[in-house]
Image (cartoon, rainbow, N blue to C red; front, side):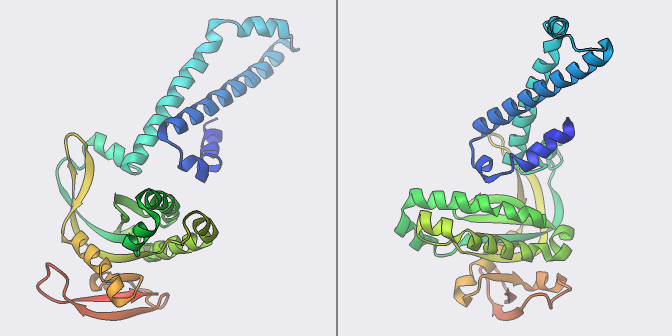
Length: 294
């Protein structure tokens, strides 16, 4: 039954129609589905075992047996467990997969250092789009784009935070450099948006395009906040990634990366990587080399 529940989660509840639902409605629908499924499976199992035990299926005797209180106890128990598990799963999604456990264990209660890759992903021409569509439609556009961003899970990306029309992705070094996931995730996202161009044109009159900046370096991870707790990354690595992304319009490029990350890339032949130049990023005392990727 556990295997069947997991299969239902993957094949049914991973569909887009469920991903855009409110938490409350999704928890209710999933819980009802699992409870009905459990009741059906339990009843079927009981019918089979009853017929084997007595040699034939006497529905009258079976109905008397089923009327006992003990018959309903497992269903009530499983109902409560289903609701609790679904609530916990939604909370885990709120903090990011795995972070709820980290918060409960206090893993980042004391700041600690890590070496990570960051991507700042920003909607191109967002000001012009806002003037054209209005704030409500822009919010709907971003909701759809960030829902489509789930494709980056195939490239082991972690979504760190959403800031307006920008989203910050993160990878551990091993996950980000494996098969160049940190680069391929960007192009996969753009391809997915283009594959849904008919949907975006019909609903918004445009196809969204995102520009991005990549960087790698040391960051400090810490649990912050009292009224609202979350796991935060601190360090110049994020600032640099953000400022590299800010150079995309200037150089008319969609994806830029730092020299530090460029040096970590072993298979440079898989993409067209070119030196854009040495630029002085805000807050830096020395020019930084940045590269474009196509």
